[in-house]
Image (cartoon, rainbow, N blue to C red; front, side, top):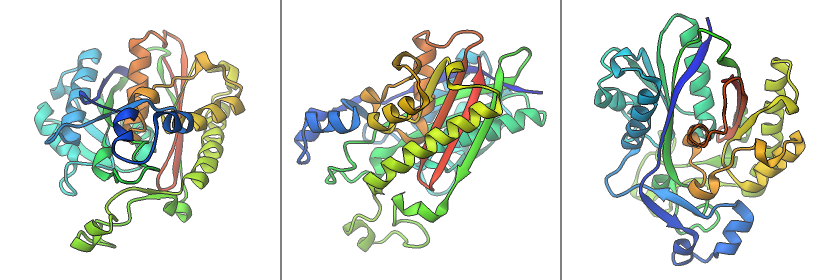
Length: 324
């Protein structure tokens, strides 16, 4: 038994934060941000809007597209590193508000690779006999962003994307998923405070240890290397070469990373899905946001082979191949 993506959905908050807005907040410029990241604007939650709110919007749209009722969902997997609260899992809040009364629910924490990790788990659940799995990537990265740090605050945005997995009845299916991690270099991208190692305190807040930290130059090199390797691994597992890719959907981190990976793979621009200019880096929401846009734009057609690849904090990296 194989799994297939029955429907996709996405949601981004209404509030737009442009590079011009950031110019008034920190010492930066639109040209500097655009040249180094490719980002023009990003979406930011309104006051009181949380991860579960974004996840529910994306999930409802995916369920509608899949023509699946919430009561038919067996399990909800929510990929996020910015859940509503440390406890309970935000997926449980989503389960209740969706009315998915039969569904088990849990969060998956793998940062920017979270969606592919959750997709891989969902694929196994379908193969084990479940009928429908709701996979969501949702993030409120603005909640862990230091808006006085010009090196990181220009990168991140908020959003959510979702897919409904079901049983494949034809050649359309998830062909393979590939997951990796290396905790030895976990300090490349991390939030040092707020957990059990360095619990929430006045000192954590005052010294901004509750915000994301990143070693940009080192991250760039490893990101290009791991995404290229993960993509080649996925292609080899399916007897494919880069020319067989109909659409490549990479994690939307930085346009220079995406261009470097695409060039190494020998992919033309029309084969690479890029939307980070409008949304920035939305971590686990990045790939499902881009996937849904590609569907809406008609860039994915019946029989197409879609390859997804990501890297993220952990350090994690992952890839997946889906035949539409």
